[in-house]
Length: 125
Length: 125
Image (cartoon, rainbow over all chains, first blue to last red; front, side, top):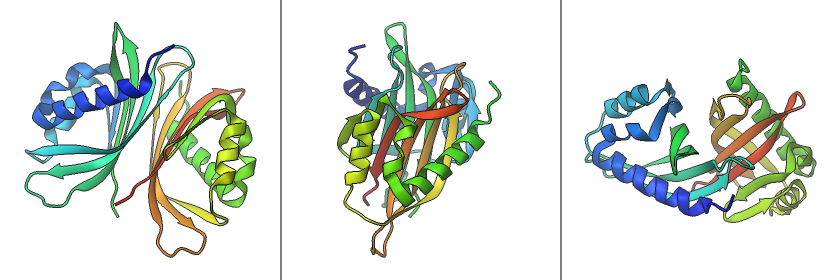
């Protein structure tokens, strides 16, 4: 595989967070029925449950800012990609961003990629 | 697969950090030739290169403390496991721990697991 996994990871996260921050109810087509989300202590499976969880989060305005983004191929052959992001989350009218860490595991499908694994944690200090 | 991925992730990270903190030169058997490590901005491949990098890190004493640990199966069938850790790193005589995030992608092999992907980042605030 000669897929440029770093570029892919950058494109994916740019698209994902732009969509999340403008209208997170529209992220469903990035997940499948066997996709998993761990959001803090909540565990969800399936696109429908994952989007319900994301939509239910108690904020109106949200902005993600990426601090670091690292990617590696996650298999020798199938072209899947592992992405780890650390960044800052700005919510509603709060002045201080919250730091977070997030992992995406992206699986190729029909010329594009979907999210198989998604793990999100705020980093309390 | 009915592998308890959360218990596996807890056992693995406990063992890994105990070994890292006592003698990190002995971690080589957890990696393979195709394993990858991203450590801050460095990218390494192969058990030998990975251990050389870990051994070269400029501290004598080190202690990892896990704050959060989350795990998900990373494939529908082969039993591989994705682990995300956030935690604190105490180095040498420094008083203030540094926060970090780390991802491990564990692949089953002969009744045990090896690390295929390893991504480590300090979280500067």
